[in-house]
Every structure is written in structure tokens, then in C-alpha cells.
Amino acid sequence: MVDIIELLYRQYKHLRDETEKIWNEQNDIQLTTAEWYVINHINQGASTVPEIMKRMDITKQAVHKFFNGLEEKGIVQTALIKAPKTQRNATLTSLGYEVIDKSALIQVKIVKQIEHNIGNENYLKLKELLNMPWQDSE
Image: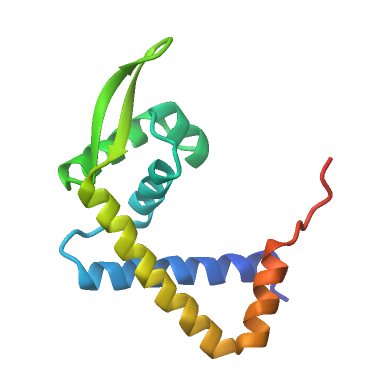
């Protein structure tokens, strides 16, 4: 029997893969799932190497690799900032914001398809369930 965590993961993975596939079919700039994660974290305010390392649980070298690749694609620009320590900081470029906006449109279409497939009542119930706290807070 497949447990609920596995079912949730499969659906999540399928939705991420579908979003990436549609994006890559419709756009010249090809992006991997990991690059999407980095872009989304930058868009949500994590912009330094340590912040991305912590949120994504990846190495410093991996973050630099993603920053370099996304900078080459014109999606982010990086600069050194002086905090207590000098850190590399990434910000979205105008193209980066365009990528976020186009991605949001793809996600809206996918969400509408989900609602169509499972029905409005089930969609609303699913949304309600996913927004509930699932664990006791300690």
C-alpha cells in the first residue's frame, strides 16, 4: 500500500515536471527543476549564497553553479555585497521577472486543469485540506 506522503510526493513531482516541460516547449531559455527552485527562492527574498544554501539544503559550490548558469541565461545578476562578511548576492533581472510571470501563467492553466479534472467541490476541499496544519506544533 502506498502511503500518503508518497502519493503527495508523486503528485507534486508530476506537477513540477509538467510545468517544466510546458515551459521548455514554449520558451527558448531551458530551465531545470533545480534552477526553478533557485529562481523562486530569489523571488521570495533569499538572495545570498548562505540563504539559498539553507533553504535548498545544497552546497556553496552548487549555489555558485546555479548563480553562474542563471546569470549566463540573463535571468539573474550577481554582485558582491559587504555584510559582516562579503557575500555574493543575486537579484532577478527584468528577464527573470518575465520568467516568473510566464511561469505563473503556466501554473494557472495547470491549476484550472486540476479543478476541471477533479471537480470544483473536490478542488476546494483539496485546497482547504492542504492549507490545514497537519502536525501538532511543539
